View 1 (tube, rainbow, N blue to C red):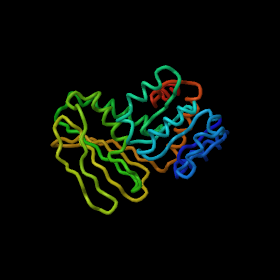
View 2: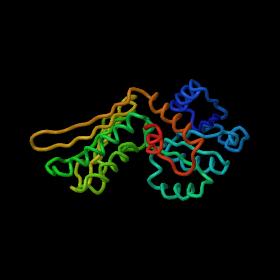
View 3: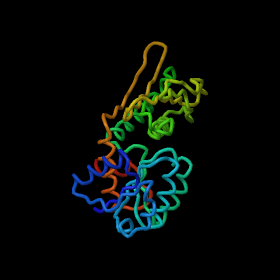
View 4: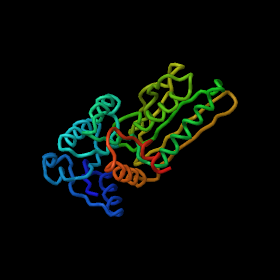
Length: 253
């Protein structure tokens, strides 16, 4: 498989190592200093592009890849909420293909299923109040994380008393705290922490007056995300449309 990398930072390098170890070829690497390579023959000849960049860049990068006729796997967060319907429309006729996920970790995908099952169980126990905390490295620009938002949506879809989510507190890298723990009762509060080089921790807690239930996913490093992104690329080569981790997980089960 011929892969183009869009974004060649820490994640891009990790994806490259993983892709090469699985026998794939990196035919193009695009970063901020060579954006003109979207027009290159090497990029147009890629079977799929894997895109991990900033929220402000991802939307334009995907459109440029579509214009070149290249399928895209994107793990950039902080932009899809605004553009999700547009992306689905652009992929509806089979001309464009986008595999998007807020998190490519297989462990997170399994954790998401546990989260949804627990939310369904909690429908009968209104004495438990649910909240969430996500912890990431200081370089992450969006808060709450895209994964936290996706997990919150999984709760909303399965817990009748919750209809939305709210930003809670944000503990910044310098120790300052912004935001508030005040939250409307129908919403899930998501608190965020930016600390060191933490690759990602997501904690979901159901708290009552007498006890609490807590589930946690902790990433050890970026390797799980990289493997998931390459697995998604392998899946995307032979599929079309707007694809998600559910499609990939269903194909693996």
